[in-house]
Length: 68
Image (cartoon, rainbow, N blue to C red):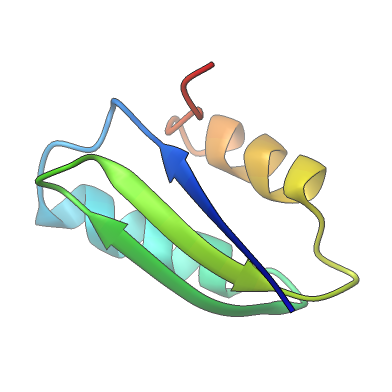
């Protein structure tokens, strides 16, 4: 199991939090997603077949790209 925390500057409200948690949570292999609007982060725990690349691509696709 791998856990990563990403900085996501576009998080501004609870709707953003819900969208990220729902969309990323539906990705196969993702065990948990905790988005935080106050510090604009998302902590994601996952196993294969989910990968950091797939998670980052999905976040970008739903307009919540990870900060570089």
